[in-house]
Length: 201
Image 1 (cartoon, rainbow, N blue to C red):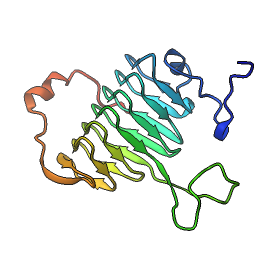
Image 2: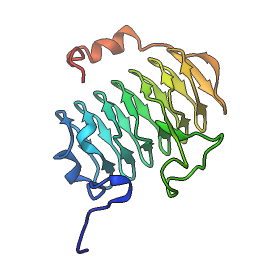
Image 3: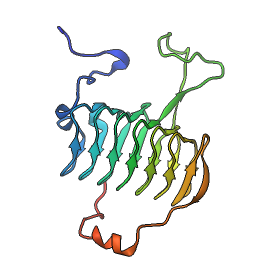
Image 4: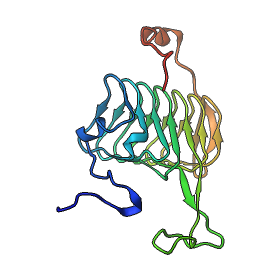
């Protein structure tokens, strides 16, 4: 193509994929694995900490800010988008097909498309926080403004809106708590104590 830039929404870096992503990140830790078919835009706002993994076929808009903690996995077909901030802690797992949304259209009194003249639509933003050790099952949808506390489990196909309690298991649409998750045993905690967990993004 004569001009590779994509001016849709003013985003000019949609060509970055796979190996090209690393050089455009705000921060990239040691041992980070970015698979060849990852697509990431606004990489200048993305920070990926040590030993995190981004699997093939994910699409990520770092928006106003993206942080992915140490040893966390963003698996196949995950979508992170909306233009707000997304924070994912250490040792978190985001299952295949999950959608993390940091904005949505205002519905009442507005059109719901960006293609009309300015003022016809309104976007409402809400940052998403996923804390350490959270587990997000396949095809979950996480709405703007949601907070998933440490160790919480979100079941497959669940819809999350609001704040989830730590070390609690949620399923359904909208998701509801169904039980508690046991924290890792002291024996397992000792297995990772040589890793420096004190430095964070």
